[in-house]
Length: 253
Image (cartoon, rainbow, N blue to C red; front, side, top):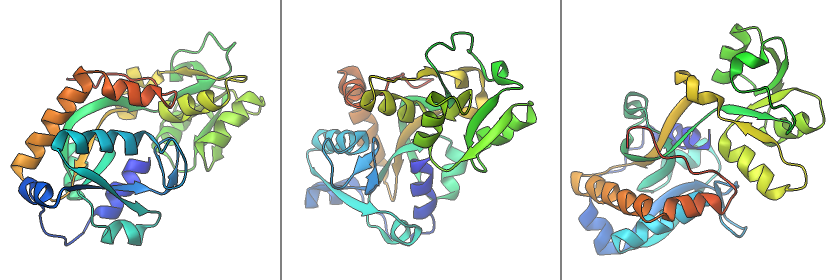
């Protein structure tokens, strides 16, 4: 969700290309990230979020330092001077409209179900037909579940959706694995069970990649090679685990 906001915000930027040689000459790789959106990123908290840690690792692989362009609004997204956006949904056609190219994918994600720990019979979205599920307002997950006869309860934020599950206000919440994992990390005394229901739902599963803004071919190749190394040596998995998020290899790697 956050990555989609960033990608939309960066659309239409008139910034000129910054090739790999220029990035290395100035010694800086710049990332656009939301200033207050843990577990993704935070300007003021420690640890700073997995997008920041992943970007730092990429910068080290390129032999440069990381600079973060902190953004919280659409206007800031459009004018921000950054080279990459992390957790970009790896659908080339959609990102081409936003003038973002894609690296190799590094993580598998989507929309699954957060349920109470004793809800062992829940394995797929179909298991929620006739039951009440928290969804984000006007989301694709809400539309698809509503079409299947699931009773919907609309919320603004995924954390409050998960809290509604534990309070018994809804039977499940359609949330990202990052939100569920980070919630359990911060609330080990009252965890939810996360169901990877998106595994059987093509419209609700996707790979995540680095969104490359203004990239030349050498830059794309350098980022792809860095991702290969960071996945192979366990760095990517370690970073996600630091925030309670399960690492799942990208499909097609």
